Length: 238
Ligand code: PGA
Image (cartoon, rainbow, N blue to C red):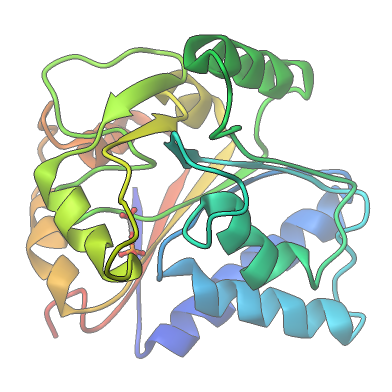
């Protein structure tokens, strides 16, 4: 696991955008794994800027998102489908974009279909990740055992708390979600995790103390051969 510390959040976003640009240059029809949350927004803004400037062409690339609340209507302002439309897909053209269907009649069938589509695409080339304050990646919440494939997750209390800021009064916050499983994440050829802000200092310290904790999903990534964690000084406690 490689650790990159940048001066500012903007530097983190530029560093990550360079990795995306190189990936698309090397393989225009890349399969990209995308993430939601506040951290990737600056990266998406930078990718939009570079795409509009003609510096990157995503039109042959396909995307799969890590997770989605369940159940949630696609049109709900807090669905990850809405998030991605707002922050990236309305401004950058991809060959195809795919997010878990938060309205699926059968969430387990949706998970199986999702995994099969990623498998058929040949797996993820470049996977973007964030990290939760509790060490979750995607919506793989701390536990003692984990399904390999995508699954319906009960969201942890600290995740619900952290994400409640996005839901305005009267908007019901889903307590379950569909999440990519560890096998998809581990089969991704390159993983980049973006981390920003002082609220991540404790989990970053724990992540880099040189141990695998089974109840910290992000620490399992030490077993993956190609992970780059890109953080600002604030997240590194500087
Ligand atoms: P954040 O979320 O970017 O909003 O901090 C990260 C995560 O929970 O994975």
